[in-house]
Image (cartoon, rainbow, N blue to C red; front, top):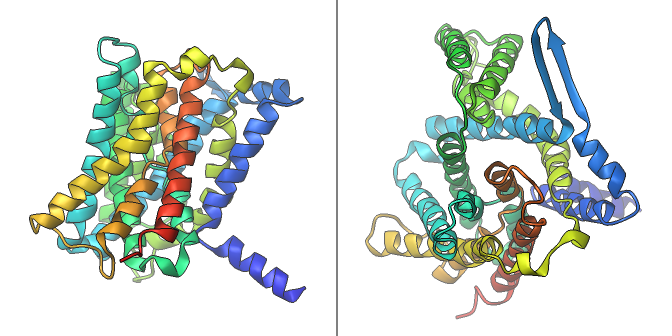
Length: 389
């Protein structure tokens, strides 16, 4: 019995467990949405939650609190990781940046091109061009971890590094292409808060309560400005000091304290709230529409080709080197896993097409199918073919 508990504890504490939880959350959402409790599921997502202070009101459905609020914490964590890597991690050496950066660029451009070519001529459907450009790091990493000793650890670092640039790309895409009406007043408030955080950083003030209050005001300001609220998370992260005046880690402590919430609450809840596709409403004609085809081929084919081709030429022209101990077959296997768009693709889909059932949920299903195919084929390829001579 002790052996079983030990194995269970090892699994829960492993990096792969986040991906396992996402799979469970996805299946649970699909079962509930297509079972007896579908009405309760939709009611929960549409439940209005909010508060008011004087004339100021903030009332949103629960789904939007998840997609605008909780996901901002995820991007905040990405920002913390990015700052740490640039100042004290692998990205401090410019040579370590080149391959994952070029790979991430390819992983954005080629899937977007696939989607655009399929949907040329329809301005509305073209709004979804960015859907197949995203990678779900937790899922992809979970599959890679399942391959264990068959894959060198350098490829895990490559995938994580690529994912950071991939997420930064997603943030820029959201900020530039999915911003609607702008509020100058909200921007002014946001600018004041950013200045205050800059001063806190310059004077090495490391009271977490100060940064929490500033981040909350910044999030509300950005939300009201018309720019997507996730941008508040990444901006706040850049102003978190690396350490206290006494030399104790500050940014690292915050990042570590977030890991539990990201793994066990935020990302599973996001998956649960967004993966509940109503299969009974799926229109087969919609499954073969330009949007669904563009998403599927963009993620499953375009993503792996874009990442691998750009990586290959970066290595061939000696702009970068293969990850240590890895071969091109193994690198290609990791490229396949980048086609797991899942949570991030669902998120961008919700921004692109605000009416969730405009395509009878066929767009959401296309994301799930493409992510599933990328995960299964990536695992099979890495486990059984990547190490062959």
